[in-house]
Amino acid sequence: MTTASTQKDTRQIMSGRTARVLRRPEVGAAVAALLIFGYFSSTTDAFLTPAGVSTWLYSSSLFGVLAVVGALLMIGGEFDLSVGAMTGTTGLIVGIMTTQFQINIWVSLVLALVFALAIGAGNAYLSMKTGVPSFIVTLASLFILQGANLAITKLLTGTVSIQGMADVPGYDSVKVLFGSTLTIAGMDIKVSIIWWILVTAVASWILLRTHVGNWIFGVGGAFNSARSVGIPVVKVRMGLFMATSAAGWLVGMLQLFGVSTVQATTGLGQEFSYVICAVVGGCLLTGGYGSAIGAAVGALIYGMTLQGIVFAQWDNNWLKLFLGVLLLLAVLVNLYVRRRAGDRS
Amino acid sequence: MTAIIEAQNLGKSYGTVMAISGISAELNGGEVLCILGDNGAGKSTLIKILSGVHQPSEGKLLVFGQEQKFESPRDALDAGIATVYQDLAVVPLMPIWRNFFLGSELKKGRGLFKRLNIKAMREITKHQLAEMGIILRDVEQPIGTLSGGERQAVAIARAVYFGAKAIILDEPTSALGVKQAGVVLKYIAKARDAGLGVIFITHNPNHAWPVGDKFLLLKLGASIGYFKKSELTIERMTKLMAGADDMADLAHELERKN
Image (cartoon, rainbow over all chains, first blue to last red; front, side, top):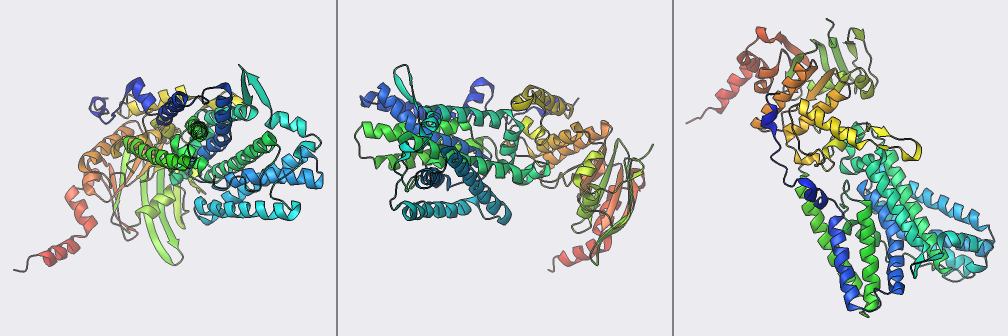
């Protein structure tokens, strides 16, 4: 071991506990979330009231479920733009099957999930087999789903929204799962917030504590390397696409049973919101790096800003401007982190 | 002592094209076999046969005295032959320990709570790298922060840890500067001292000479010499490789005319 001492790592720039914390992908987002929270809490009266808090938490939770699962897909090196439209599609499937065709509500739920999984698998299959970037493949499925949402809903119901969900047999028992509200410490907590926390916890566990998580990082970080060490790369990505579609289904159900109706335009203009949440939460657009908790914090930022702007009675077009700036900042910070982490290859 | 790998008259043809033919060599534990040759000499074809990617169309491959017909790289790996390719099969942004165990993670617990044994993996990584002479404060840092030579060492240490008896290094020094190449040569010597057989593929005689015990020189798919170190000098090896006449011609051609 005579050569050992000559091989000290002089290259390590940051070390110790602080560095380990700063190196985490979600830190930047957490700081931003605190600033936004502080700002709207001090400038508006409604933001910090129990009703206010439950409003922006609810809003965040719907983005959050998609952002967290979408973050896993992004870490795995792929995109799914169609998942926003999927929330509408699955909601409409359940709505139309139960109100128009009197199909059992539980059966409808399962069929909608199967449909979502099939679309996810289809997205995965097309992009993996043809090598066409998933950005393009899912852009196509986004348009297909959006078009179908409107056209088929109009065709079958004559309107662009589902009415009479509340009268469907079994509605109340499903609502407990997806649309109920708990009162905790004087605050109305929508069940979707519980789902959001649950999904974040499970995703984070998978990502950081299981071999599947290791594989996801590997597949997104260096596809060929991952394949040559024996990781089933196609299965990993297939699983991620299907999980993302399933998350779309979950959010579809949370929306449907939260407000008992669904618009055929649901998800329109939301294609990028979960991508923004994930990137603001520290995910690299190029894959291989990111965090589930970061994406959840990204969604929190989105939800707080969305509702904070309403409470502050600003024109809500400021939201898009603000998000654009935030996205740009996040991408620059992520780029810096990545350089710092020494992605030299 | 039986050789770890013994090649007897190996040949490989793609259709009507003979990529290599009549290659014989043997590799013992604690020995470095250098395979030298210019581009197109057949080095990659030979590696692909040894590592199980391709099957030879003629000749025999013996591993520990037993004839082997590898169907896949997995078979070669199971027989104890690991190949470290130029891209090293590492993921730059992932921590060193996650890279070390990528695809072969250690787990604990059962059922839904089956999880990574992170503590053990960190310690093993640290220990294995220390054996190679790399002392790291933090195996949590992304592997991309290591130098090219150190990354090679991680790839070698990984192959050793997962049971390789022989490792094949495909041009490990070609993309590196002089100093880093020296670092890699040291790791090759370390692996040799640990009793492994090392096949070191390179086109640079200056890299091969200091660590090699045996030298197999390839040209246009055929062996132009198989030497023990005592039978050869670096000057002669360089000449053989370049083709002495070719070099003389070239020197003549490049001479200043005025």
